[in-house]
Image (cartoon, rainbow, N blue to C red):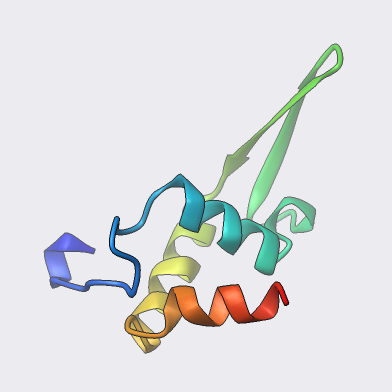
Length: 76
Protein backbone atom coordinates (compact mmCIF):
# COMPACT_ATOMS: atom_id res chain seq x y z
CA UNK A 1 0.00 0.00 0.00
CA UNK A 2 2.98 2.25 0.35
CA UNK A 3 3.33 2.35 -3.41
CA UNK A 4 -0.09 4.05 -3.64
CA UNK A 5 0.44 6.01 -0.42
CA UNK A 6 -2.68 4.52 1.19
CA UNK A 7 -3.00 4.82 4.96
CA UNK A 8 -5.59 2.79 6.79
CA UNK A 9 -7.39 3.89 9.92
CA UNK A 10 -5.11 1.99 12.28
CA UNK A 11 -2.18 3.73 13.90
CA UNK A 12 0.20 0.80 13.45
CA UNK A 13 -0.75 0.25 9.81
CA UNK A 14 -1.57 -3.08 8.23
CA UNK A 15 -0.16 -5.72 10.56
CA UNK A 16 -1.00 -9.26 11.74
CA UNK A 17 -3.78 -7.91 14.00
CA UNK A 18 -5.54 -6.30 11.03
CA UNK A 19 -4.85 -9.33 8.83
CA UNK A 20 -6.46 -11.66 11.38
CA UNK A 21 -9.54 -9.42 11.51
CA UNK A 22 -9.76 -9.56 7.70
CA UNK A 23 -9.35 -13.34 7.67
CA UNK A 24 -12.12 -13.73 10.25
CA UNK A 25 -14.44 -11.18 8.65
CA UNK A 26 -14.25 -12.77 5.21
CA UNK A 27 -13.95 -16.34 6.53
CA UNK A 28 -10.90 -16.70 4.30
CA UNK A 29 -9.82 -20.04 5.77
CA UNK A 30 -12.99 -21.63 4.37
CA UNK A 31 -12.53 -20.18 0.87
CA UNK A 32 -10.52 -22.44 -1.42
CA UNK A 33 -9.65 -19.50 -3.68
CA UNK A 34 -8.17 -17.58 -0.76
CA UNK A 35 -6.35 -20.15 1.36
CA UNK A 36 -4.75 -23.55 1.51
CA UNK A 37 -4.52 -25.52 4.75
CA UNK A 38 -1.31 -27.38 5.51
CA UNK A 39 -1.79 -30.06 8.14
CA UNK A 40 1.09 -31.94 9.68
CA UNK A 41 0.11 -34.10 12.60
CA UNK A 42 -2.03 -31.97 14.90
CA UNK A 43 -0.71 -28.67 13.55
CA UNK A 44 -2.48 -26.60 10.92
CA UNK A 45 -1.10 -23.65 9.02
CA UNK A 46 -2.60 -21.64 6.20
CA UNK A 47 -1.12 -20.13 3.10
CA UNK A 48 -3.07 -17.32 1.49
CA UNK A 49 -3.32 -16.75 -2.25
CA UNK A 50 -2.36 -13.74 -4.31
CA UNK A 51 -6.06 -13.53 -5.15
CA UNK A 52 -6.81 -12.92 -1.46
CA UNK A 53 -4.05 -10.31 -1.22
CA UNK A 54 -5.48 -8.52 -4.25
CA UNK A 55 -8.98 -8.74 -2.78
CA UNK A 56 -7.86 -7.19 0.53
CA UNK A 57 -6.01 -4.44 -1.31
CA UNK A 58 -9.12 -3.66 -3.35
CA UNK A 59 -11.29 -3.52 -0.24
CA UNK A 60 -8.86 -1.18 1.51
CA UNK A 61 -8.67 1.13 -1.52
CA UNK A 62 -12.47 1.57 -1.44
CA UNK A 63 -12.39 3.33 1.94
CA UNK A 64 -9.04 3.24 3.76
CA UNK A 65 -10.16 5.70 6.43
CA UNK A 66 -12.96 3.39 7.59
CA UNK A 67 -11.50 -0.04 6.80
CA UNK A 68 -10.45 -1.21 10.26
CA UNK A 69 -13.39 0.53 11.89
CA UNK A 70 -15.79 -1.44 9.69
CA UNK A 71 -14.07 -4.72 10.61
CA UNK A 72 -14.33 -3.88 14.31
CA UNK A 73 -18.03 -3.01 14.00
CA UNK A 74 -18.77 -6.43 12.56
CA UNK A 75 -17.32 -8.15 15.66
CA UNK A 76 -19.93 -6.62 17.95
